[in-house]
Length: 472
Ligand code: EPZ
Image 1 (spheres, rainbow, N blue to C red):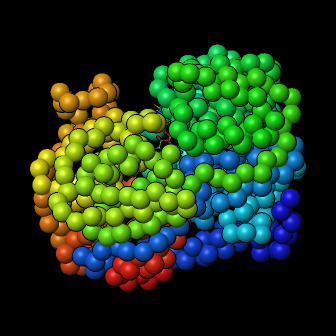
Image 2 (spheres, rainbow, N blue to C red):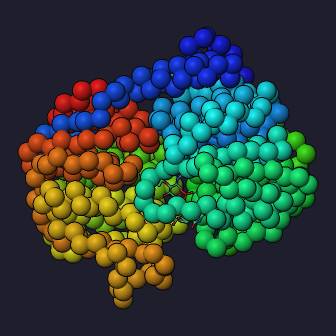
Image 3 (cartoon, helix red, strand yellow):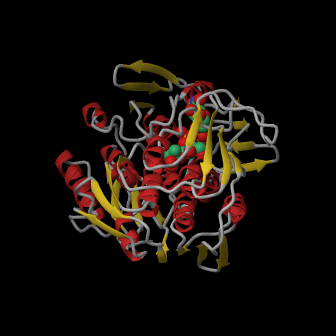
């Protein structure tokens, strides 16, 4: 068990909100992002080695899962990003004692004294992330009630939570919509249910998993998401004592158990961050070794990376991504659920596609508004046309979906430095890559959003030889 590192600076208790604020501020200071503007001189290849740590989209959920245990959990490989700090703050508000372990990125979460946080304190977290919606099941199991603030998250579409709420009602939750969020109770407890998702939603699948494990009886979930982060969350729940089986054809069976214990787990690596740095290597004609990246979870990305003209070498401790020289090639990509091409991978890759002679098409089939970032690329000289209602394309692999969008990228074009503002997490990283690729100087503002999902990206840019000024 990791030693109880109760040094005052790292121990977060719920005695006083100001302690929580101190914790959040200190954590923020550790990232070093105090200003929101970076000035980049483009045209220099990124070269060197960086390490990616645990996945933003697993670590945050694993922290919530700790609420379900009767004993403390230890999560390793946790990235120091603001989404993690937001969830830590909300957990601390509910009485979870959070301390740092010995190694960097090791967190100990002790839910022994979980209590219902004061609503006003929770309100302070409204709009900060989408993760709070996953507190529903665990808090209903622990406390019989929950209040969830209005959600945040990237503005890449409406981001409704109807799948989540429908599933919770199937388990027996009673939900009341309030002006600043939702209030839930479970007057008759939570019972296993047969649930079929209208779409393999990652969040809704996590919602069902985190609720079903302690519900009375069996739950059958159909049309579930099966992303690697989902499998890693299932591994965590199994360590806690849950009985979960992943069946063929996106079916997951969960047998409710009366009690769960804490877990010890090392979070899966962040494949979205790895893909972002790979795209940066391609666009800047560089060579980046991404420590911690694994081939198995990135196979679809690697196929596309090679088709565009990139090359990669898989090692035991990571993957080398590089531009082998020669021209890049245009491609047609459809984003899809796993094991398809992830929607989070397209934004960083678009910059390289602006350099490929010919026409590339990206069909975005997961979110209805995920091409806003292309405005800045066009401002820098790209030629990208966004079709808000998607386009028919005889080469399509997947059927067109409602709310689909498509981006048609004609190249090669030369990007010229400009002043651009980060719109969202992945679009923001795309802006960084564009500035690193462009001729001349760019100013990228609102970069604080990028620290939501990319640990120490400023330090990594320095490690890779980028030429920039940052006031942080
Ligand atoms: C997760 O979001 C990730 N975020 C996203 O990554 C990722 O793009 C997405 O999964 C798909 O892989 C986190 O894990 C924190 P969904 P999530 O539920 O769970 C619709 C990043 O950059 N939908 O699979 O919110 C929804 O609007 C972020 O790291 C409903 O209609 O995604 C979307 O169109 C961006 N009703 C589609 O389903 C619902 O109740 C997929 O959403 C839920 C979702």
